[in-house]
Length: 157
Length: 327
Image (cartoon, rainbow over all chains, first blue to last red; front, side, top):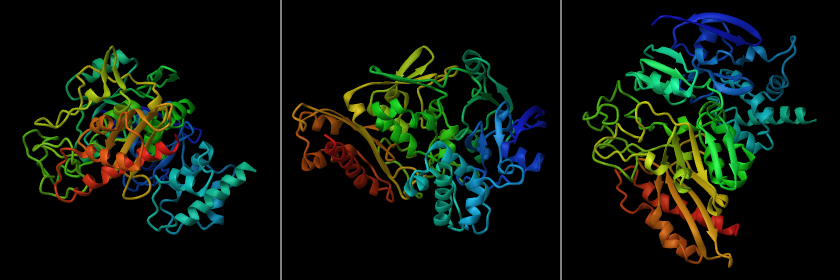
């Protein structure tokens, strides 16, 4: 199939790519732009490893065509830290030791940032419900909940 | 995933015309379609992207009811203050569905077009027989692993379960789907598999869902969705019930009752027999439990899914009694 021009706005930077229409945002990020922080887990929208923000809302890059992302502001895990300083959610994941192998972590963190912003981190129960789309094979869930709780409290204070 | 050409629609009419061409499909949130394209189930030649259309994502709620644009996101509808207060069951079906990420992508119109999760349907490379995919090829599920398959509305051609939550509440509250000018009860929009399981919706080529309208009612205002699952969250229903109730001034006699089942049937399943049996009756646990058994009248199991026939009436009864406590 002929390639089409796709303009993407990733972490505030403009990119122009020539892509087959079937290329997902996830593959464009990883294979074309070298932004490998966004992980490919199931590639079917079941694990959350590929979570990014589109116009500030968390979405799955594996089920989004790159072409659909045109005109939207995309933020990936690489775009979270500011001037070398970790985002508070990133810092909370370190504080709480909220990972083991780390593969799901970028997706967990992107999801957590949005979860707190949406106002869905009011209790541990609510955090578990609204973080349910991010699976952790290592089972680090209690520490992940603790990290989201800590970051939510920091934002509230 | 086979490649396709990509068209970005600039108007609803252009989208409808483009999607009517052979091999073309509408693309909204993509959470079903892109997934199924990766599975080799959907093989579109052209995708007509409608996510950039303006004005189709409005949510308007007043005394008469709610009108929700086809491109409104599931997550936005779930969190909408007036939907939560006037149609609690609608909000509950939405926030209990999928994950937060998927709810930010998936649209209300696309939600109605969601396909079954039948593992045989989703796996063409290992299971060539599927009447839903290839009419006349047979059914791999019958005689296979059936724990997640339907017990109501099945046929000899197909036992695939309808997996959605929202439509369960929509049929309970007589919602109407807008296909441009044409309007259709959501209850009539979903088709039984019968001998043509490949045809799931009463939508014609060249038509596109533009909105869903839900009439306001006392029963919709006092409603809930109870979803029982194998795990606590991010899972399809083992059995679920959307229930709404209106009681007389005495606070205990049922004036209006709405009951629909999810997770057990080949389509969203209104349980009118339960409603008819309880209308005019006093809300009491024994009466409610006995009437709830009518929810699975005519159910047929395929072995491993037998539990659904026992579970569904209990879910219905618990949902009704839970609402009764708030009387």
